[in-house]
Image (tube, rainbow, N blue to C red):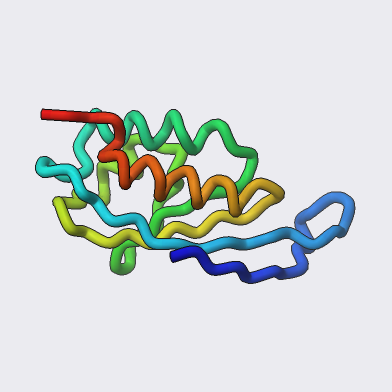
Length: 108
């Protein structure tokens, strides 16, 4: 599920529109979002210039921070909201969702 919300960003130096995309990440790994899949997630998100946050309940973490991701303590079946804002936000959300569908390239 991918949603787009286009908003004006005052922080943008050239005052152009910044794109904001949202999606849902479902943890499919049997052991949840532990260190190895979290590392793969950080590798994925660091390729993008957009600000990317993961939201679970009332906890918001930077998707480029392994410690933040581990704080979520997400087990199998957990649905995490993805929010990305920036020029490559759509691509970032899609890449994260694809990575999750591929179980973070981890097989047990």
